[in-house]
Length: 154
Image (tube, rainbow, N blue to C red; front, side, top):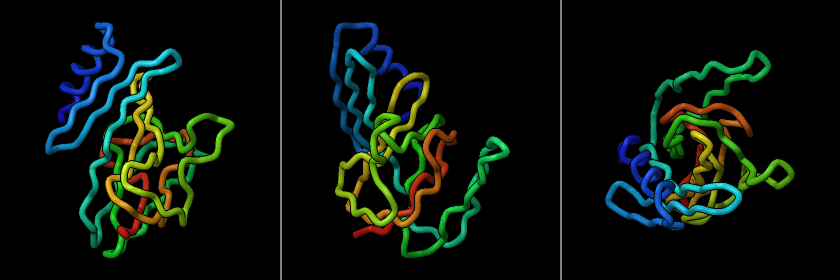
């Protein structure tokens, strides 16, 4: 789904009294829910095919933030960001992270949040997997298609 289409859906929900919207098509599924505290848009992260050697796009970061390269191995899949924004690994500042290295996650389980334009988009696992590496740290910027997690399919 194109970003402009997603923005149109969000505008439709915010301009009306609709409190919840679900849509599923071959490209993925979208769940928009309006709440009192914040709006959350559930977006299934696209999954990159296993890679052999692909350079990771670099994001300009604060000098104190090291830029990490994801593990490159045929056994692993990459979970990229479906949008530009800020990665949050925890549902709130004082909560535990959604996942940590070594965790086994089920299909549909939340991996992180990506905040874009004041909307918190929950990134979910599209398949059962084990977290091998977490490339983006909490509260760091992320570009579209940039790797957030390296996982092993189970």
